[in-house]
Amino acid sequence: MIPSFGFAPTTSPDAARLKGARVGVLLLFAFLGLLTATFLSRVPSMRDLLDVSPSGLAMLLISGAVGALTALLVTGWAAVRFGTRALLAWSNVSYLVAIALVGVATELGSRPLFSLGYFLVSFSFAFTNVAMNAEAANVERLVGKAIMPQFHAGFSVGMAVGLGLGVVFSHAGVAPMWHFLTVGTTAMLLRLWVVPLSTIDGRRDPDAAGAGIGGPFATAKAEYRDPHVVLIGLIVFAGSMTEMIAAQWLPLSVVDDFGQTEAIADLMYWVFVVAMVTVRWFGSSVIGRLGRVVSLRISAGLVATGVILYAVAPTVYLVPVAAVLWGMGAALGAPIGFSAAADDPSRAAARMAAVASFSTVAGLLVPQIVGRVAEVVDLRYALLLVLVAAAITFTLARAVRSPRKLFRSRRAEERIVGSAVLAADETAASSGAGSAPAAPLR
Image 1 (spheres, rainbow, N blue to C red):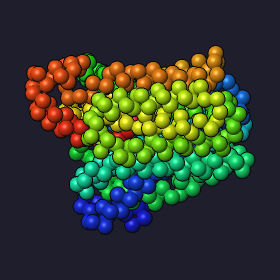
Image 2: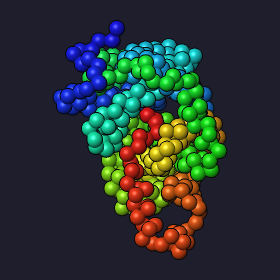
Image 3: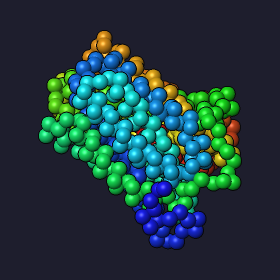
């Protein structure tokens, strides 16, 4: 029995209930960002306690990608079978168990236990992520305004808070186990109240068509044959790769390559996150003014500049500058890709599932590649693999235009359809950008 705390499921919410649900969903996003950053903030300490090399750490981190993939295969089925309220309640408990296992594993130096814990961390993240996005979409529909970007900004705010707490705990010399147990327990207790607040209904729908197991891969199976969808998927892959490398490796690189403490490393990644969320907050107006293609190419340039500056920086004082450029460039790639995938309403769900699977594949491949390269060169140089993502984004940027000849120039399009028609078409296509959820580290 899931406690309701006075927020019983309803299909006809009044204004107060809707307002409460909006606050509740925002808090769900913030708590998920907090828990994600709690883990990321202590990667250097966990590496040392587990006594692993970069490639060894990459092998351990792959268990998280497997956990996320496993969750994606069953979450759609579970949401229909049990309802989002139940999924959020269960993931609340499983997240505490998972992060506690990771903390105990690092204290004991047990790599198998760490792999199990991180598998559960990512599994719980995926269950929470899918369910809370479903509730966010429901609240947005009832409110009647495009408020989805605010919810995803809440995730980034939660990450910023989590990184700040990581700085405090690390500077105070608190072991990761006690850090994780403190934050995990507090978050779980608060989320016990937030879950019923955020779910207006959230019950299983006995009349809904039964969802099968297979997740985005099953939903999107026909879309993989469309070259346009594949190109957008590669852009999402590149955007996820850009964020993922920073999240998993930037703090560790600051410690190893610049000789800084874990607390300072967390501050550097905090700068990256703040730069990214700032651009995302104003992303809709930026894309509306510049268009999707130009926005992507400027983003790719910023990413390339930032990561090159980081790799060659002679002093740690240039690292925040590199982090700002890298974070600004990382902000819009995945959101624009998801927005472009949803251009055709009749195929939006399947296309969104298809491009989301590219992000999942990035989670399976990227940690391994960076870890292996870091066995040969310094980690800061291994991070230059981000340049591959920047090149993909810049080269394939035209794929996010409305469907037509993907690599035909704008001047050629104007000759065919007329400049006024083309401008109106591009304005309409760009108007939805920024309202789709970003791919995860979330």
